[in-house]
Length: 338
Image (tube, rainbow, N blue to C red; front, side, top):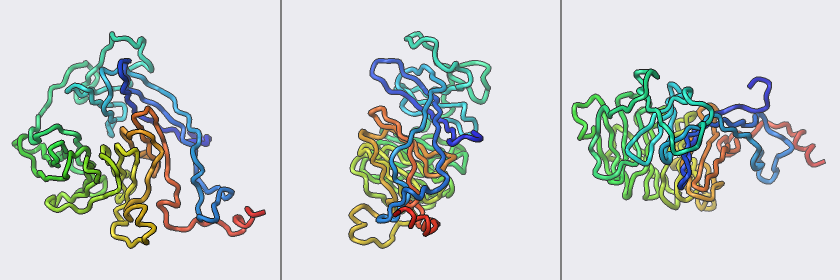
């Protein structure tokens, strides 16, 4: 908002309770502005600015919608953020238009209704939508699907059969993918297409690695990112930088990777911390990370949630990803010692 010392951002959240009513939640968060270095917080030994710990960011629930069962995944529609799809414990995918709901349910009771919307027909009536097509290539549970961001007819799927499959909706068959590859040595849990490069994608697996692929030659894995200590369940490319992606999972760590640093020389001391492409490890969670999302508007800002009901919104210090020295007047630094 104009004249405020914070920026307003929106979050889509879902609950996973034992016996209580579950909800789809739309919340807003106030993220404090950080437009310049605070020279009083310069660490002369490390040559760093920042790293001052947490700041207060006010979070408020705006919309709270009764949900049938736990929310296993929630995603908003990029073309219309008011449309949200959720995955339930059953075979159903629910689609909500949150502008049609009150800010909070009238009663948190078992007498609830869930509206299913035919997006193409508009909000004239609620109804159940049958699948337009069913793709049957995998031989085990499908863990994730993702649309190609630059080709509307292409999508990928990964499954417990350790395979990555690429599908084309223009094909005459739904039982055979355009491409199929044995992607990992254990279950494949997630995939993400690079938003800038039409050929590049990444997959994450129970084998503790993230794999990098080129659609032009899926027979050869481009690279394997290795640092996680347990299963990987999420991998997402940065919406702001073609070479940056992040991954998270059971080891409570969220790793940020930089493809441009693959193969760089390291000292023995640096190598102990991880490979050169491992840019940053966020270790703030104390339980398995359930999901995370890059902020589409603010570079390097991530929201992550874990199974102990903790949500964190955080940003890496600039000196981590920016190799250039900050332009701070020497006189300002000298003045700190007085």
